[in-house]
Image (cartoon, rainbow, N blue to C red; front, side, top):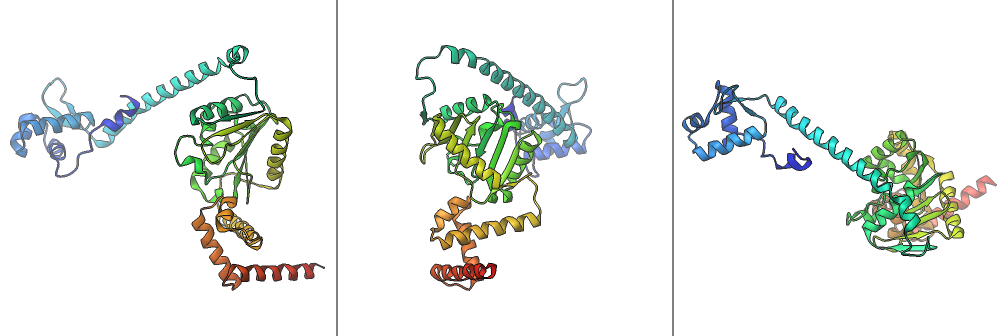
Length: 342
């Protein structure tokens, strides 16, 4: 059975269907055959034959030993174990084939570097528009890493919508060494079950993850030698090798990393409350600076609707009816705190 074979199986028999009736008859009888199904269920030979075929494919019927026309019912648990065992074997074989192909393709990298002269060697800035080519670039850069991989990854990633290139997905299949990887996520990632599961896996493999309220936008820096940034709003990448620019980008990432909180993928109410408080404080600061809702949402990596809801709740807590009034209240509060400190 192929990997996709399980999707080609017929529907599990339900009450009132021909297959359901044939399976019920098989459970109640010593055996069933085509003629018994036609006679006792009042269905046509074609219907009976189709139902028996479906049940055989689902392993819910099997031939009586030594017989070529009579069938007995099989326990559904036993049938599912047979089907899943075949699927597991196919999946393991497929994974083995994929790993072998990956290793063979990576073995060609030295030959590629030694002989390819079709473009300038490592241009200072290389723009890659095609999503598949971008995935290949990311894979090559991270697989060749020797010292560190610094990665800032928003969870509300607009690039995931077309499904052309998940900006973090290549890490799961590129063969990247997790012990070199440091990933910076927004605080809002702590509320995402999917992200927490990925973080637990990454840490188990030796990686590190931290969260901060407003991390740098999507940014990858490898070995302090190359950086990757989005190329505008589309699905492209810009690969930067100009050392002064790479150093500045790395400084930005390491600075944010130093102020960020370690994250192991776990979730508890105390952590959730502290995370929520950090996000609210950041919203208040941005409100005081006059930022628009969509800008605040983008910087905090939360949806616009969530951002607007939290702003409304904060304004209600401040007793303010307008943004201007909220800014005034916050300003007065800040001056009062400074006087107390003095």
